[in-house]
Length: 194
Image: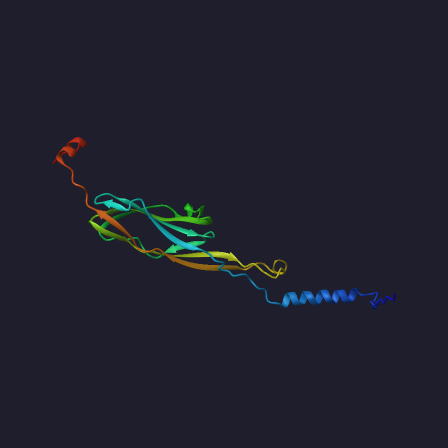
């Protein structure tokens, strides 16, 4: 049985060839454009409006709260529309929205929640009151991540500003008439009849 062996002539001083190969690979890595991941990356940004009462009696008040939710931390948020209502008195609760950011878990996902504004609404007329739609604009600072592996060694990640916009739908609020009381009920409550 015969076996054949193949022999190759490898030069003994091949350090120069390896160095040339390494420099060539380095040059190609630097010349190829760096591909960045999507900067938007599926950021969720939405608004919810909460009221403490669905049906409000005439002369009573309710609290309306605007909550902003985002999947990444807020950098800057603004709203160009004011909260105004016809046939109702509105008192705005003063606080700094940036001090109210919390991390919460909702439907199995983590969100950053900001209490944007809170208003005490006192209706002056029976019927339906429509809470206005408001538009919010948010800015996020994200850093591009390099997918080629060399970006961390040959450059710093670039900061990219991402803008998002969200609006809530108008929310109806039912204003019911104040129930009349009998004279006996007024006397038992301690208030005067006249």
